[in-house]
Length: 471
Image (cartoon, rainbow, N blue to C red; front, side):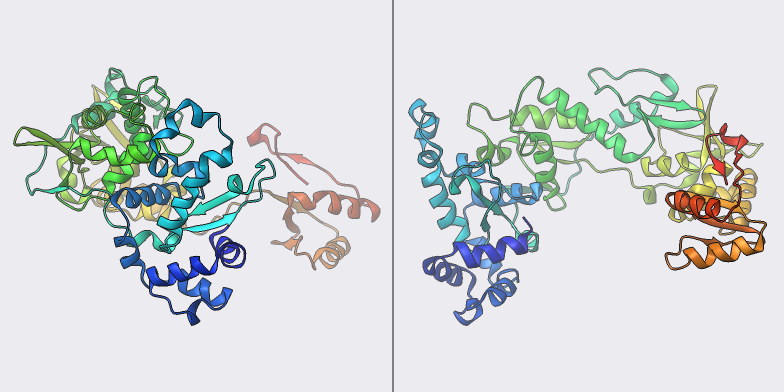
């Protein structure tokens, strides 16, 4: 259900007079501003009173809203179990109660602590398999409210000193294209290797997002071996990476501060080990670590920004115009750009690149105009020749998918086709005797031509092994 639909249903079908009165008090709305559905929708999704409403929440409730922000979807009442249930919820007698008996008090707490504060939407869902209204209730934290959330951490420590990074793990991974050496306990399916001169990571052409995915999957595999967590909601590693991304510059946390995340989703016995998660996150290069007064603090590791290094520091133009890369220094973003315009080879345990005319012609404009590409254009005659050729022909050749081309030598038939199919823009005249039309229009055009007494000849494209034909 869309948030605005939920908001209308909430006003028309759910809110009582007491609910509206509480929301007005929390958000500072007047009675006139909530006098109709349209007015309520406008003022509720505005920023009015949001800061004060959110500041009135407990830290655990703020963390819960952060998790809803990350999920970015509605949840049912079971999501709130660990925050609002009493201790008896872990007892055997609680488990044998009906759904209504289990969650009626939890629902009351959600209504009082979040819905009546004006920070949560509620509406009845339409899932027919949910037998009771309590099961069908859906809750959503509107996207318009996300920016007003305060930090999920109460005790983040500000420190200007740089932590110790394990960026070497990513360098070892990049150099895998040369060494072919597996990294112990790394997530499988992400090997870096060359195939037909193209750099691949697993089954994909190299992109930094897949390198990051390998890093996180390896981290998860090390931190949470053979453990099942409530991943139908969100995985622990995904939750940690999100929460740490909310830290301000130079802010660090102790592992124990992650416990506020686990309280929302797990029992104390089921909660992941925060120390293990942070330490393995550092091992796989995702987190930075520093020790202060005998305690280890963590935050996301800094990435190597291409703007902080000079192109000359990681690439050398050879006499033939090819370029040799230093895999110890090349920024990952730069390597992604090169993977889209170059052919790569390993020569004497070094990675060399040469221009790929077809790949460069197909590369997005931001890649062709990237500072790295322009550096190659100015410093390598080989790359300059290819890039100038691409620039010279840019826009002159347009390739369409799902398109057929026909040669019509009879002028009478040409006129009939254009007149009969002009209204639907299915037939577009090209130069001289040729027309173009979408593949799905071919049956109708073929039927029209045959009814007009003409014969269709088919020419197979020899470059595609006869898989494509031109009529």
